[in-house]
Image (cartoon, rainbow, N blue to C red):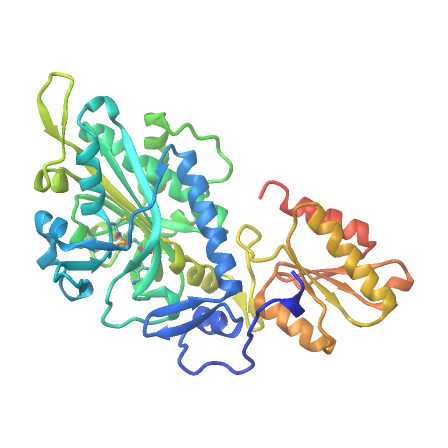
Length: 445
Ligand code: 5CA
């Protein structure tokens, strides 16, 4: 993309309404624009990151054997009356009446809708196990929407639902989700710690929240610092292997790590004192096993091997896709702007032309742009007639991990400059070498 043809409305001033770094930086970098409280337009740069996260989530869900689909944002109130949640959900639910006076609502989550789909089409244990998921906009009329996309009213969420014949199978689905989530967050450059949580309005005995540690996080968390040494890495996973998924779950959840809702001071005091941490975190996902709660209320039964009808065991599993952008920025920025991890960056690198209009510099930038795109890479070329300082400031603000700087002086010696946004370190290389380096960095991402 050429910056002169893009839409990147960066702000010079720090917006006064933004209280935390990620909100400030998303507004300044022209990623989002608030349209009303807790509701945002996703401008091109923000939209690009959102799509990248969505893709990672899809890839990891499909890898785990889960099946993608898409359900509507508007739902009929009748299903929620069946489950008993229409009244329970309270004011967070946005209720709408259509022209025929039918009660509708903007879905805050989809347990009811998916259970209805399931019961309409599945009647035998032979069709199980089954996990369906979608990535769709949700609406919760939060009392205090704040911190930008972190606590929005409209937000983008992946929600998945498993259907199993037995509790044991459903717990395998739970473990499988935990493992796939660990992989998902790591690909986004994040450490998200599974912590024992509270079922809330979804219900359930088994539930973990995934938290990214950040001083600006809304949740208070208590953990054994040993959990932060764990890393998923590139292990081979067989998602059908119950024992393997179980052992990974144990590895990642056996140390003390809880949110304030489930915190137990006596248990916490058993953690060696020098490893006890009280901190704050951003909740970027939650998994639940809730047994037959919805299947019984909504009569979602299957015929078991003995011919008897039994309610299915279910769980639901969510990832806050739009919130994740805020979490990534909270975890990765400096005073100049965002620093995108390579796995989620909106463009792979920036090209800064120090002397736009100079024949040689323009030709070198065009050639770089062509070579990079020919390799399937996605550079952002700042081809505006602007001062170098302004171009660098924009690149630093929007946080592309790599920048290639091209100027007449370097070109005389046959070199361009490759700079890492994270370390600030620069290297002089031939343009071909610079392209090769960028290609190597992104190989396999
Ligand atoms: N049905 C279950 C699992 S699919 C569910 O709704 N879980 S949840 O309530 O925990 O939401 C899943 C994730 O969505 C949360 O972990 C959080 O990351 C994100 N989320 C929830 N509320 C908001 C909000 N108001 N703004 C942004 N993200 C949110």
